[in-house]
Amino acid sequence: MGNTDTIAVQATATSFRIVEELYDRDGSGVTELADTLDVSKSAVHNHLSTLCALGYVTNAGGTYELTHQFLRIGFGTRERNPVYHAARSEVRMLARNTGAVANLVVPEDAEAVYLHRIGARDHPVPVGDSVRLHAAAAGKAILAFRSRERIDEYVSRYGLDRKTDRTATDPATLRSELRSIRDRNIAFDRGELDENWQCVASPIVVDGDPVGAVSVSGPSDEMQGKRLEEDTAGLVSSAAKTIELELL
Amino acid sequence: MGNTDTIAVQATATSFRIVEELYDRDGSGVTELADTLDVSKSAVHNHLSTLCALGYVTNAGGTYELTHQFLRIGFGTRERNPVYHAARSEVRMLARNTGAVANLVVPEDAEAVYLHRIGARDHPVPVGDSVRLHAAAAGKAILAFRSRERIDEYVSRYGLDRKTDRTATDPATLRSELRSIRDRNIAFDRGELDENWQCVASPIVVDGDPVGAVSVSGPSDEMQGKRLEEDTAGLVSSAAKTIELELL
DNA sequence: GGCCCCGTTCAGTTGTGCTAAACAAACGTT
DNA sequence: AACGTTTGTTTAGCACAACTGAACGGGGCC
Image 1 (cartoon, each protein chain N blue to C red):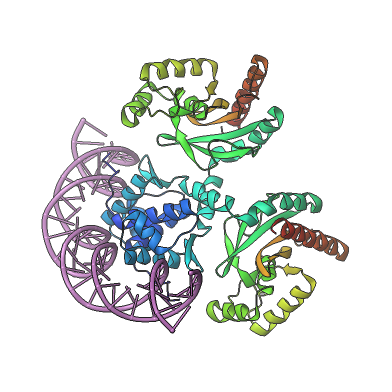
Image 2 (image 1 turned 60 degrees about the vertical axis):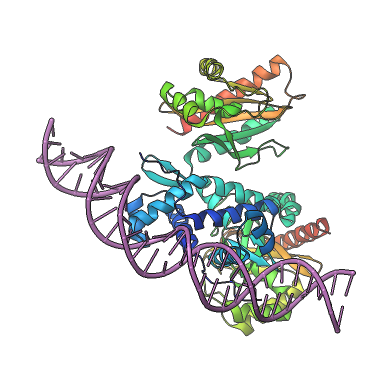
């Protein structure tokens, strides 16, 4: 397959840069955008009026803001995801039984996307955001159940970015950790993406393919004690198993 | 303010047409898109590879699909909405107390966007989607509390589309209905956007400006009886009042 | 009332995003 | 296994559209 990672349509790129900037700033003006994006004012204005006409941006009294069209598309694509459907109720049960935050994660290219969450406490990654697969428990649970070749491809193609000191940046270390994850069906994460945040995850494997993972996470001081850790590990892994059955 | 509804950047328009088409079809191939959108294959390919490079589309084995970036943006913009924050718990209570579906709606240009919902039963409008303001109870509740001039502007600028037979398409009829809504602080909807679906809504007015509405809806056969209707009307309107206080 | 800042508009030109056609690769069928 | 068909990808080239820069207009704040 050819290299599809080229930016062939620059106008699209600038449009989405504007969208992202509007998102970051929670609304903005023309001049402000033109300065930060290093595009002429009139060009920004052209993009904004186009995005307005298409319904993705609105002009709230001088400042431009994103509309909720993105919510519509985001919700719709999630709703159609079979893993999401199968996992929803189980994630709720998991949050109830553990008293902690329960997540559903699905892979997308090199990233693990947090598709769903119950237990709205602060979490280092908001719903809809994603983290590199090797950088968190849920992602590692997914990675561990890929074929040897796909793991190699992941490492060579995307590299192993470091998030905190505890992120595995060495391929050999990662591989041995993935092996133990595969053996126990459970992945741990002790502060790998946030210093004081821990996580237990188990993969959802359908037909030999890891299509997602469930995880339970909480602040480090609350997720202590071997028994608790083992209990939640059991709950997480059985939740994943239930979801697998749902997906057959 | 000038006319910002012009499509000045056509490349952006086609990119988003591709996005919408990918959304409708839940993934698609190059040729298929090129045929339905009436654009050359290579142009579609250029847009798709650009969208891939930007992370909004992914190439899942031959077919292109939307990624969950839209969920990230959609969730984020909703999360920053003060009305959403203030209303969330109250909508949950409302669903619990009425045993029906409870919604939060906010205005966006000429539309009422369904920002949030508790009680996942089938509903004519999915979360994130929107309906013209005059076409449903929640929208009418919002419209009713706008100034006379803004109502006139709404009618003259956007017109009164018909959704079902019961939609008010006559300005005078609408105006009188809005007046009674303003008097009672409650809007009803008997099958205006779906034949057998009813709805009760109350506006959230902050500082004289209707920033949203809460609504309770259900199938026509379940939402019968004057007492029930009056009871739910009271619950809905007091929920709206509580949210208003939260927003001060 | 004057200033300044911001959004909008306008013409010109370069660069680029289209079309069309050839190429490659992956099926399914015989 | 080899063909034909279908699909994704690449390439060349031209017309046009998406940028720049400067001028216009209007609102708000001293």
